[in-house]
Image (cartoon, rainbow, N blue to C red):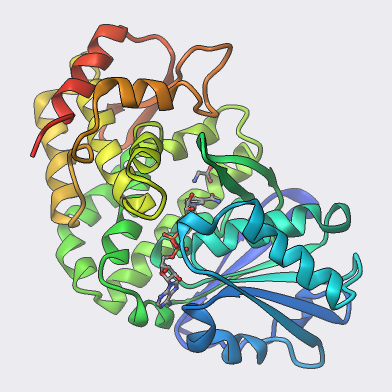
Length: 364
Ligand code: NAD
Ligand code: GLY
């Protein structure tokens, strides 16, 4: 790794692993020490393969490298597409000593990780995330899975990677809409537990949307640091880790209502965080100024601050009822006690939740 590269660690005892962050890492970093056996299966998709598959293969000198290329898009994060990974592993006779490598965004990462968690009861796994969202969030922490028509990420497993390789150069080829989507998860870290980072984001949001390399690297480093800390404290989401879902209960409802792939995950999370801030304000947890602070940052990041057209409060309530954070039928939400401090609660006035939903539905 060059001097400009950085290494973080996710501390999970015997499942600890490094996150390598820098420019020009793909194709130049030797990841073979993280591969236990002789074989590797790179899982990628039709968009990422022509861009980065050849370089990714070079990260495994001395290993036999196969690949499987999936269709692109959130609408393919399902059983059928997952099965194509198992088909490839079985057809190429991969044993339980193989290593599955995810090369792509969060969709590829979540599916490849779930395949690794379950193929022959679990094989090793490496993350090479290539979107901003996957570099700051989904590649770290071991959540893997697929969607169900009735709910986002409803089928999955915890399965930690051996290493995460983040080459920030890959962001240069991202479609413009994917940058704000990734920034939503970056802003999340500032809002839930890092006020100095939130303040830094408020000063640097324009540089980030303009793809300033130094600003993006800093944002990725600080986001991964925050995520690694939370995951190290609560790997399996017994408590604290739920704060990483700020805006996600509202967001998942919007994503499924709009149809997978119509609203990007990060866009839905962005609007969902404004809704969480709005409810926090109605409950007297934060003041109007803090609510407007959240809304302003989300808008400056280029994210929506309203629900998809045609969505009604009942559409939210129906979908929010199947959220994974709910306990014994009680809706549990991540709200804000202050900018930089999240709270997990089931203790809120349902009528105020409906007021929030009404305020965001039908808004143009
Ligand atoms: P994505 O994986 O769909 O990628 C977005 C688009 O960019 C796709 O078309 C992809 O093919 C393309 N792409 C990827 N890298 C590229 C590159 N370098 N250049 C050009 N195009 C590129 O979307 P995403 O935002 O990365 O991930 C969203 C998914 O992540 C959702 O399914 C969400 O549920 C999941 N997620 C998981 C976790 C977790 O902890 N596991 C956390 C957050 C989100
Ligand atoms: N993105 C939520 C989590 O990793 O817990």
